[in-house]
Length: 236
Image (cartoon, rainbow, N blue to C red; front, top):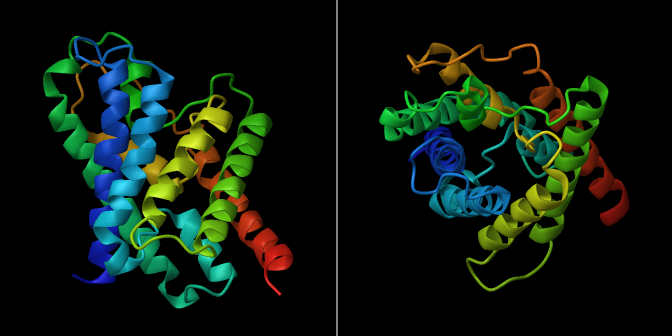
């Protein structure tokens, strides 16, 4: 398997499990309905870990344009390969969202809220405030990229790193995710939002493209700042 295909498959797995847990919690008549924020954050953490285990040895399991750019900034990934990885991540995220739509096929019709349906695919702020929402995404992704780079500098038992990164995702979700839903990944938001826009989802509303730039710009800025901070402070 090529690195390009690895990023597609890994990001698809990430979205199947990540958006999948959101669907289970927010869509009506699922057995996990109203299971709560803890379930969502734990599900996303496990989604990242499982996707990383699946393709880490193939593509490095970036699964996130903000991380790909951050790794390039610190010299751990070639800039020439950044566009290819980002395209693969967006494709994988879109495909993963399509699978989630199919998985919950009868539940869209029995869920009345268009906002809940969009929430399965894409993020939205608890309180709409563009500047504050952007800052939240910057801070969350700063912690993500800095945390991943710091984790990578430690020695763990073989195969443990993806599990530790999964716990980092859980921590970010619990501590920082309540404001915007912690996209912290442009592909994770854009790909599924695009799927929401084109899929025949029963009773769906608009895809809120007016907000969509925030979970793209915020993570890119935050990831770059996290990488630069690591490079300036942690590296000799």
